[in-house]
Amino acid sequence: KQEVTQIPAALSVPEGENLVLNCSFTDSAIYNLQWFRQDPGKGLTSLLLIQSSQREQTSGRLNASLDKSSGRSTLYIAASQPGDSATYLCAVRGYSGAGSYQLTFGKGTKLSVIP
Amino acid sequence: ETGVTQTPRHLVMGMTNKKSLKCEQHLGHNAMYWYKQSAKKPLELMFVYNFKEQTENNSVPSRFSPECPNSSHLFLHLHTLQPEDSALYLCASSQDPASYNEQFFGPGTRLTVL
Image (cartoon, rainbow over all chains, first blue to last red; front, side):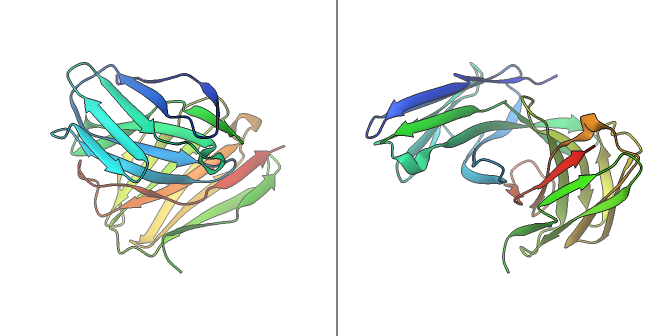
């Protein structure tokens, strides 16, 4: 059974700092990996989707990498801003049988960017 | 209105009540999902629908009853819930359940069971 771990559980940084969030997964047979942002009490906003054949994806100040063989992904946030404060979730898509592809989520990293 | 919408945004119900959560997607997708997010636990997939047909039920108790009348609408009917069912219920949609398609999420319904 796939398990996704995100470290650290919480992170507090001063504004302007570059930071890295980590995600690891136990089963490397994944189809893709997705990073989401969740604001308190709100739904999920998709940030980046990396297919299993890709090594990284970039969107603005965000860069996500994927090392499928080692079961790791990182989300790099450059020049952090207070508006980046949220919980960041990592999810991997794997085959769960009978034509079904499930997303398995980590518990998230709660990021606070201090002005 | 665009994206995935959910109503109500907040719901408080007693254990003997019957209520329904509604999800609507305006993205032209064919697959819809219900997830449960409990405090300090990862999101858990509950149900998957593809072209109105349920394709996955992740051992969800029968007190949760999904309904998908068409590809744009998804309901979750609730009855005789327990306090431990209190959680954020998220709906999502994607073009289809295939491996490479991105899922888009609604804002969720915060459910409290008294």
